[in-house]
Length: 371
Ligand SMILES: NC(=O)c1ccc[n+]([C@@H]2O[C@H](COP(=O)([O-])OP(=O)(O)OC[C@H]3O[C@@H](n4cnc5c(N)ncnc54)[C@H](O)[C@@H]3O)[C@@H](O)[C@H]2O)c1
Ligand SMILES: O=C(O)C(=O)C[C@@H](O)[C@H](O)[C@H](O)COP(=O)(O)O
Ligand SMILES: [Zn+2]
Image (tube, rainbow, N blue to C red; front, side):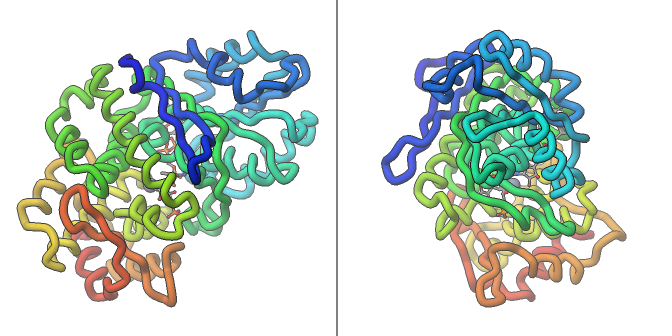
């Protein structure tokens, strides 16, 4: 891995908060953790790995063994994988596990898994004993390019996406890019939706790279994956550094999510997050085209690349109507005075937040993808 490419630091108001480390193994994990746990006694400090049932089968043992070689108490909490378990029931079980195992404020949680694991671990870290440190070890492409960075944590509530949560920054994000080799193809595609989103909102050059290197990226060529993950991490870092609590520009990261989250909810979470974001991005690109911003060619280019990464650009379903989807967008967290803050494109690589998108325009976009 090239020098400098594999460590990015995240700062707020000029103050360093944490590092994002990109590696191709877990070999450097103890070294990366050492500064996080500096001053704590390795014989006393307790570490709780939080992971899901799939990751537990494939990657838990290796990480557990490495941690046990450096720290005397390493426990692991495993929950059933899937978005359907990203809820307060799982959170409650994790609180109970931590209490029974006498976890204290000075101890550490480690999220080993995808966005579901990371979002929930971060939320428990924000609230257990009013705050305990946590580290992200993202194992899906989606978590590596997006969810492990920026400190949005939380759960779905009564089927509403991410309705309960907290901003809570990790102490470290450690990525082993090699674990992407075990990721199912459709989960890889789901992660590519967020990578494409990063390019579409902020960085035309990165977007073009993703368009030019489809084969190398999909076949997990080392250089291509490093560039894909680090490219997205840099874009996300820049946005969250400028606006950690989403007072303004961070809402750009929600490109494709207003309609995407509505579809995700109405699918009862049977569609993956990235698949829904892909559909939401096509709808938002269509609205951008209809509003006179992007050209027909750009809209087609966006649809073509989304499709090339094995993501849906249209949804045939009897389960939801355009009216249902429109109604579901009304519970979006980005509502202001009853109007949605909607992310549109001026151009590929240049997004903006609009408060002028009417229900009629939203319906047009939704109908474009629901066929
Ligand atoms: N906090 C944020 O900023 C943010 C950003 C984007 C998405 N999200 C949230 O992230 C979630 C989606 O994350 P996700 O796509 O990672 O889903 P996920 O965590 O459910 O992981 C997807 C699937 O991949 C499996 N898996 C994970 N790593 C694996 C590996 N290396 N090999 C084999 N299987 C593996 C998991 O067990 C799961 O079945 C959603 O809840 C979404 O709302 C949060
Ligand atoms: O980090 C952010 O900010 C994002 O919006 C990233 C999104 O990809 C992610 O899905 C996020 O969880 C959505 O946030 P929400 O506030 O709309 O739930
Ligand atoms: Zn997302």
